[in-house]
Image 1 (cartoon, rainbow, N blue to C red):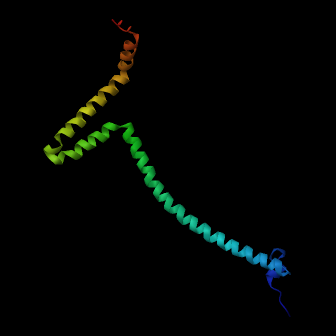
Image 2 (spheres, rainbow, N blue to C red):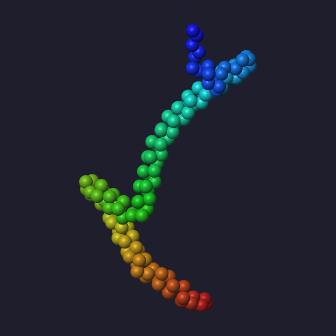
Image 3 (cartoon, rainbow, N blue to C red):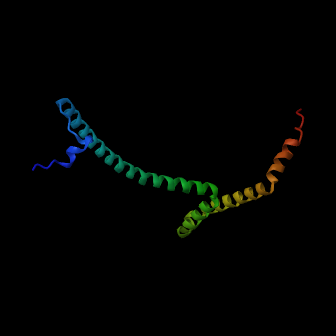
Length: 130
């Protein structure tokens, strides 16, 4: 008694009868293998890019937070310069003055004095020339 293979009865697995179809099937199998290997390679590349992008995103977040709160960056620089003593006194004083001016500017802007000063200058007529 002869037992037929289970795949012989499935219509989608029948091997082609002519050589041209067999060559096409072999070429298709090779292309599927090549696609799988390329997909794996692209996955490795994407993993490397995700790691690089994570560093870049962290840098953008840091820059955004420094732009939002520059006083934190200035205070960090002042704190970092403390162990160096008198060599950085001028730079430290410059940073503290810059921080004070920045805070004053923010305060005046929040209560509307800057807009009032600008409106006052714009409302004054210019002095006539000689």
